[in-house]
Image (cartoon, rainbow, N blue to C red; front, side):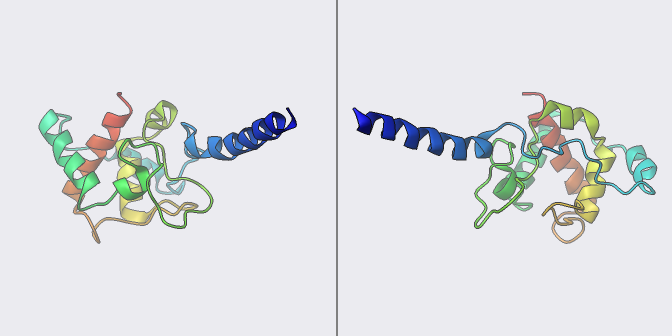
Length: 148
């Protein structure tokens, strides 16, 4: 009988150590503004020039899973649980988080793709990896995660 209690304690501890990695919100500071205050108005004014059509979302999906390698950190399902070797600390952004989706404009997200995300491991992708046009398509796909 004591082995049952020991086994239950072991699995309880194991579950507690795994749960933070599988939670829906990738970052407890999900709503923290990443664009500097002196640039936020300009970034929020930027509007995606591409309509959210199935074709444009598909272009973004191909970039997300391919050239832009977003999938590496943000995962196939956009929850920020990609396969990152040696990941320590905060998890990448969870694109399925509806509060985060509502709090960020497309312009702010483009600013992050241009400049990185201060306080996180997110590096700049424009123009090193993506053109601005490609980035807008990726953002259409990122927005699709919030609709599912």
